[in-house]
Image 1 (cartoon, rainbow, N blue to C red):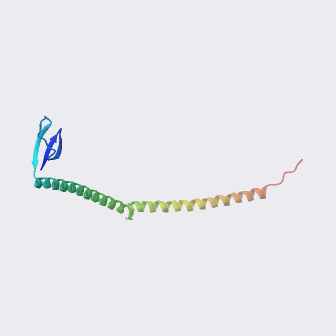
Image 2: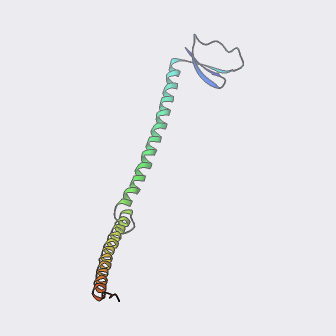
Image 3: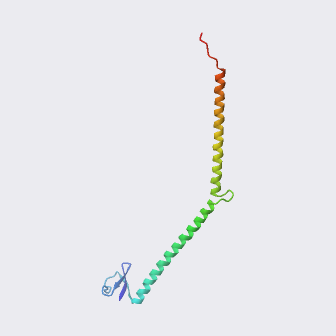
Amino acid sequence: MFYMVCRYGVWELLYSAEFSPPSKKPFIIVFIMTPVEQANLWLTIIISASTIITTLALGVRWLTRHYFDEIKAELKPNRGSSLKDQVSRLEKEMKDAHDQRKETNQKIDHIYEVLLDYIASNSKPQRKK
């Protein structure tokens, strides 16, 4: 037979050979438990723990699923307001800016060559006196 004993606020399950009647003040309550009551206690503890763990796991699963649904929606194009559309628009603008920079550099190089040709054709050698 087992006994449920509370010592200093801590519950202990003691076998009848280990149990001695309360002789000091810290013993508060003593329950005598039959094997059926013990099995009932353990089943209650196991079922409670598994219920709490299952509830937490399902809550995390639900939150994760909804969080990923929001991310998925941002990564699909929807005519302008999604993240994918904004990145695509930025890439297009960067490519256009790169092409304009290339054209501008070619124009500057052409102007520089024309200027050098003009300076070379109009410069007269200076005579020493």
